[in-house]
Length: 155
Image 1 (cartoon, rainbow, N blue to C red):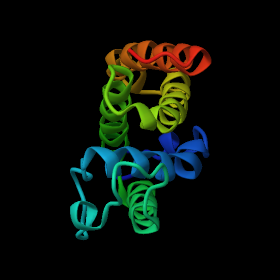
Image 2 (cartoon, helix red, strand yellow):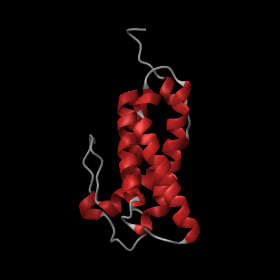
Image 3 (cartoon, rainbow, N blue to C red):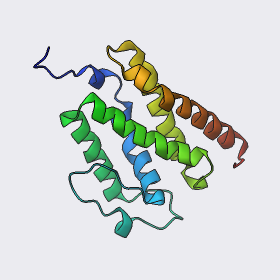
């Protein structure tokens, strides 16, 4: 297999590519936290809508969707896990008390990535072990976000 690219990580679940773009665009828009690895410029700071809106601008969602597509089509398992670690950081920041209005987007993203990370146990390689700290952080964040959404409390 030395000349072949391992693609088993692509078959886990379609939810990340379907559900993450809008949720992550929402989190990035309010945190002004642009993607760390982009091949095309984004206009997150200049075009992001004011803090009061709950929907991200369409161009941010489209940009996030393109980023995911590039990762899936041209990225590696390592690139993918790096992206999901970035998502984990955004989710845990919201769970830790930042940006109340982003809680629904953070909960959705946290649940999707947590489910993905749990499924890594069925794949060969070190992905499951590599994501142990992120899994623990996401479990805490999702538990916090769920509890606060049920009670209406904020940290």
